[in-house]
Image (cartoon, rainbow, N blue to C red; front, side, top):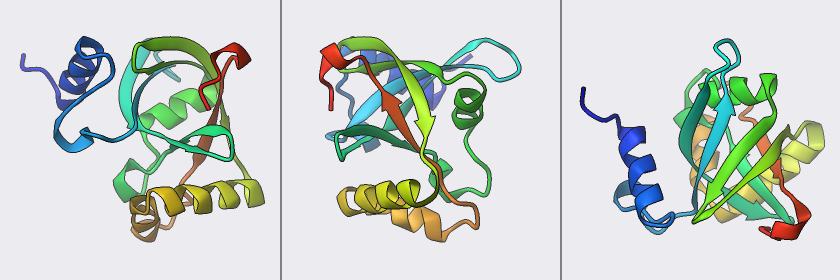
Length: 141
């Protein structure tokens, strides 16, 4: 069976210390491993991230689709996640932002990465923003 797009990005990321080419070249990319909401199996996905307001943030945009991405449903069920940035690998807690705090963070994100605002215009759902709470000693933000 041929390797999926995500699998090839994950393999390239791990083989090159977090650096990848193609559409993610030069961008901020991490690998997020969640536990399946129903299956309990581990799932790893490459995701863009944004550092803003001292936080490491993810956007569950799904490219502007009308449904949240599977990884978002997984972290709602199991917020303990594993994060890989470059060659660092650590445990984190995924905390969805809500209300005015979410709105503020989304504004900050779109000021840094405007494409997320385009995704929001493509869907009626409010695109979730997730903060990854990391161990303090890593000082990743």
